[in-house]
Length: 181
Image (cartoon, rainbow, N blue to C red; front, top):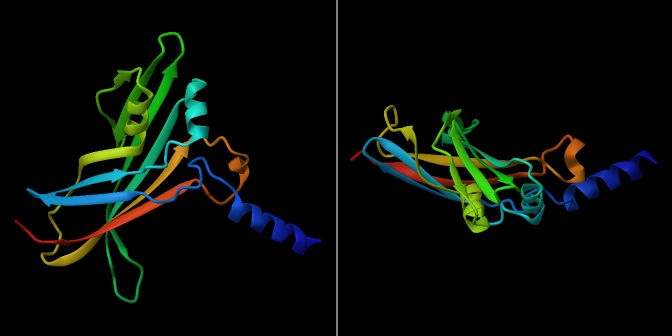
């Protein structure tokens, strides 16, 4: 009986959907210029049907991106040099039929926006463009580094809400060699 329940739970975990509609690929691009590492990322399947419905119901919907600058360490765990949390959120106001868009970077808010265009909301939540996230001071010249991005959503509206393992996380990374300018 226990093995049947364990097999059923494992099967549901493997086959189960997520708030992201089963997507787990984030496309990441980095650029090093003028002492700063700029990061762009796109999460093409991040705006799922479930997320769209939650947004239309008036719930605040957000995707949180945990972005790390990491260095490979041979025969050991990779070292995280620094990290940043970026949260893109949207909330629909059914009276004005407008979406309030906001973004925070490590808790510091940017200027909020208002739009009626759902495509702009999708782009706001699922893509980050040339964010100035990391300084290059302390990076070793001609050394390989990588940017790792993990994204997760809020609210989680699927029945995996109480499941102890996070099936709603998407990941992506990009490697680069630091060459000082």
